[in-house]
Length: 530
Image (cartoon, rainbow, N blue to C red; front, side):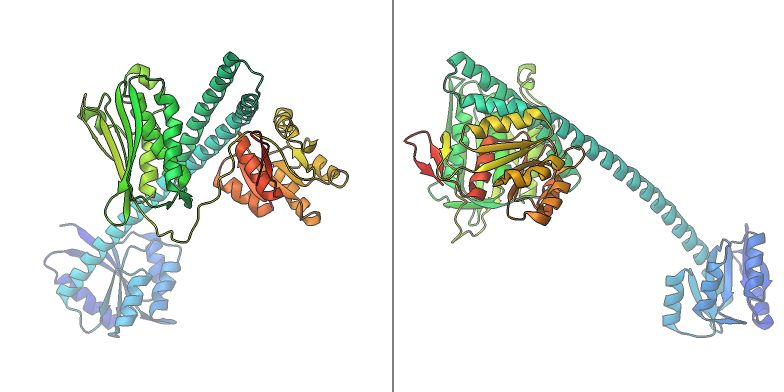
């Protein structure tokens, strides 16, 4: 039986002798007692020797109550398990003592030898447990801090990667969009331009998928629900995927839409489209003949079921078990070369954020069926946002508008000049914020297309200085950094709208048309369209 070292800090010799006698009566433990009459002497003993437990009287000369314990714990010495003693039977004092660091509280006059021995063992055990918890907590804090550092490093890397890839892609995709509007291209040239744009958009999709997955893992992804025309939305998805399906003569792509569908739906239109296009794309990719069907209909009284079914190759149990893992691809080598392995992993996360779950049913050689249900929000009285005209715009009605393009990359300025000049805008340019601010008075633009990340005077500083003097001019902030934080900072600084690079020309025209209240002129019949 090992000896437990006890330090008694007690100013009453009579109480000290009583405690010594009680400890000597213990049948289960061997105690070695050291006695100090003052708090200073007790602290000195703790500094010089090691103890297993301290028995502390709360009524010492010069101090009283919980303050006695706090003074001991404030000393630069290691205090082991602590049992405080008082002549007062006060539950509030006992609770405060425990909350302030004591392991147990005893009332003098009610203590027996057995109770004292048990209290000491309990205090030592509790202190050991608390020390273990503190040690594990410290380890968790260190692990958390390391994980946060790693996450910040990953976020910084992904942001830099996104920016550095989006910048050249802005030129590739931008000029590809301009060339697609050129009616003088031969069929072969048009096919080449289409291939350039499709390849660029494939790379952009990969970049966006990686960023989306990182945001979801970090818990920083938020849905942006809007109200939209459901039938038109679904027809557009089928029409878009029909281009790929028609490359397989033996494959039929169709839609089975219930007659009971609501006219409008409130959901994150972009993310729902991403999920459905991914499911349809996979179905077309793995189905050589037969049918791929998009079904949408009621699921119960307050939900819609979205379902994609194909008659393709199907999957076995092993493939199904790893289907939603990031970067996992279950097809053959030829099919793997046409994907990134991120689509289903991200789709599952999006659907979970929408409050649902993607289900899958498949068997080898019998095709595959994916489905999920979305709750239908009440959208009575709400109308979907008006869609912009998608015909070929050749100009706008009304007086000429002046646009200033501010970007430190000459290729980006040339892209916007080529596009806007063909639509009849008066244009001027600046290579950085300082030059833009210097030219404001002489140029007097109606709208500024402002790159955010520029050397010397950047976009945010330019916005801040601009809003102090010319609050009426419209500004569309443009950035190769695609994070929500970049958008929020730009809008907070005074931008009227925010677009990411690579610039989608249709999205740019939508924003310009809304801000300047333009009536676009379509090529067919030259009819103005607001």
